[in-house]
Length: 108
Image 1 (spheres, helix red, strand yellow):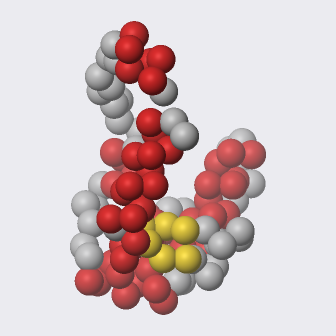
Image 2: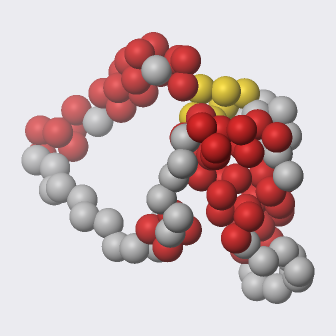
């Protein structure tokens, strides 16, 4: 098992109560309550007038969010767990990554 897999399994074991199985997304998506709340909030601001505008990835992105727009679970979580209003802008901002050493790269 790789280092990343162990980290994910450890995080899931410690935060299982923060995860939900989304009944509206295909494939029994496991999502955190915070992410569900964010998707609901972004779904409220997104323009769904023309889903076909843009490329296929934009269509898939908007189609997924369109399910979140009227989700009663997301609405309940958004009220209980307010999120940053400009979350959609943050996903497009440049991210800073720490450089890994060669030992860390080999370990996975």
